[in-house]
Amino acid sequence: MEICRQDQALEIRELDPFLAELLRQVPESAQPKDSPAAEERLFSAPAAPEEKDLCAEWKVYVVPELRRLFQSATETIRQDLEQLQCTGKPFANCTLRIPLAHTDAWLNALNQARLAIAATYQFSDHELCDHYRSPLGSRRDLSLFQVNFYGFLQEFILREMEGNS
Amino acid sequence: MLAFCMGWLRWKEEAKFATTMVIDFPDAALEAPTIEKKEATSQEIEIPWNVVVHNDPVNLMSYVTMVFQRVFGYPRERAEKHMLEVHRNGRSILWSGVRERGELYVQQLHGYLLLATIEKTV
Image (cartoon, rainbow over all chains, first blue to last red):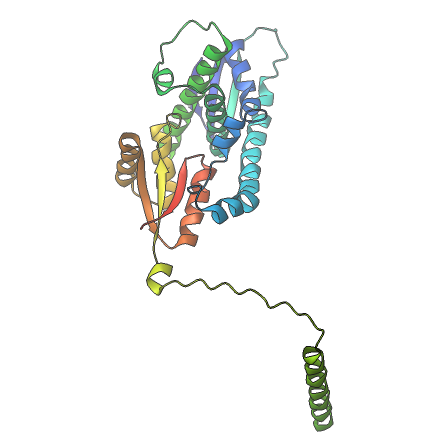
């Protein structure tokens, strides 16, 4: 896999089918769905529980706004990910082009996915820092790999954005 | 115009009379409203609120720094100082001031998926 800046876009080239599949899973992984822990993390409380009124108003007025914001980010990247519907050979490597205008949406969606996965699997600090963990023996290991892979992409996008500013 | 004013005044007098009649009626069981008094000194009202960001092992350090720069307009050095404070101490006070503005900051921070809360300074 190779990542580089190409004009007004970031290009992820030579994306092998496994990593392409992980990227396709970003929008899905960003949804808390059946995980109360993920829901709680993505829509965390704005104050201590004693501030009952503030927390209640937050749920009514702010959470729906946040939900719309997160949804909009995942929709943007879902459109970019359509490029990965490889029509050529079934196991061929492919290229993903992320327009610079979509980088904020990517950062947000990757973050949603990382936080939702980490909350669902309750990864410890130690596990999250163990970047050399291998092999992938379980769904939990794969999810940890997903969190780290998405984090790597976030780092790259941030570096490019910084270079751009 | 004068006729209109006189008419209106007459109507108002009648209305007042009618109201008095209802209130004075012996069987009218009107429940007195409960008025709760909440006293606060001007000092209490103006107590500033803190915007606090809490540690989170998932959010990247570089991402958190970028968010602080964007939301609060802090220069990179100051944003990094706060990010490291969050990382080492578990929390950092990013801003203090009136509650409404603090809530707005917390909303923006939640939009970036940071763990942020608002709390009274005292």
